[in-house]
Length: 165
Length: 150
Image (cartoon, rainbow over all chains, first blue to last red):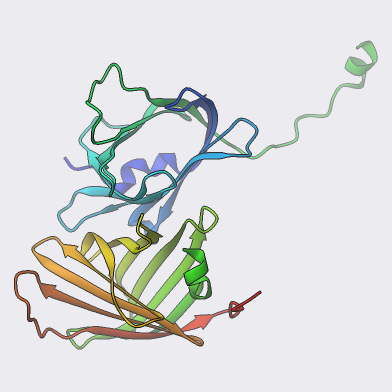
């Protein structure tokens, strides 16, 4: 059965984590999922920053939507790869596996896996057309993303705790 | 990218005439993403009779290595396509590319003053000549006008 946009309803929100880029640098990732086009699409935003949040290593803005053929594709723009159209590959429930070629021929693979409630495992890699594919040798960007939530004030501190500290 | 189309940013709305004789209301929302590396375009078309949504769209305008505009786009009616800039008059952005089913989509856009004009033509891919009608829309900006030289 084909996946639908509403299969990812539970992912709507903000997700963050600290991981590693494909080049091996530590990176701070922020990703958001929002419903778009009156619920006919899923807007997806991705940012990978240096840990000081000064340099954007990679940014992707995209929307997942249904083609007239029934297949889901992600239309996007990447600060590294430029315009993109990636196919949603068949996979298990709770997995979004996107794959395709950039306009310059780079092969791109992006996967989100729902590992646990409020936790996604993000994996991505890309290779130039002249690089041979080797699933083991190809470096990947990986990061565990946790759902972000607004800060709320906790219960007031017990005055006796601070007196004894 | 952003330098060329800065004055296009914003939300535009107006009447559209479809090729089958229907008419509706079209809205374009153009916003800058990643500090002007690309422009995101959200489109919606609704029936002028009952407000029913007719078509939704999404796209990105960006530049390729040669400085030409690439418009990767989605339309709930047409599907996905990559349109590339074709020569036209100064101030007019014309893009063209293949749709599934061996069809070609041509789109021409321009902004003059507070009017955004969009015209599109869907034609059969093998034939050099195709006299199917074009859609045509003139939209007005909603909100503040972007200054030419801030």
